Image (tube, rainbow, N blue to C red):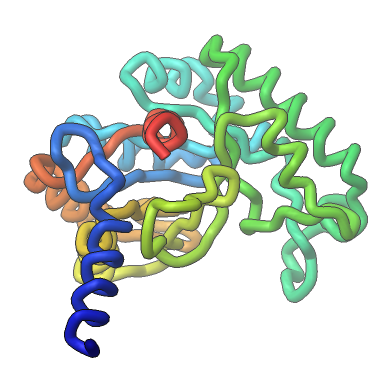
Length: 256
């Protein structure tokens, strides 16, 4: 009886992971996302993505100096299949334990109406750059509470999907497209990043990478490490499905 039970449980676990079919027989999905709209994204991340024929999603804040100074370059990368995602106008975060958060941009003192107004205005700005009406969202600091109120329902009314933080999912059953977990890459070794990919592959699920600076800066990932990760995913494209966040989330929602 015990052997039969173990067999049944093993089959159930395998089936729960295997029942989700990624495109072209892939075993897992890999998504590259980048926060804050930084110059290094245009100078380093995008050229490396293009080198390997991969797509990235860039969650840009509306007050990004790079977005202002290099608007034409940001517009150009969207024509090559990269995505501009919404990351608010002013990057408000819960200021608890974060002394860099300005009082006027503390989500604790925001109202739900205020964050919604900020998100919709940021969408207008991004539409002026890329002309797109469908958009995804990256929660700032992975916070989804403003003034004590969870604003996820509002996010669902505005965006196709939204990225949060969290571990690689055990299964795609019940996968939350409006709080998709992601791996924050901070001074990683290539082995750390490959391990995330392989964990997703072993589970038949998905890894969403959350990058900030690439090649020097805050919450940094070294340029050579970033490139090695892209090369690894490219070399394993027969078993790894990779696309922009919006395209992968569309696929997940259509096939859940």
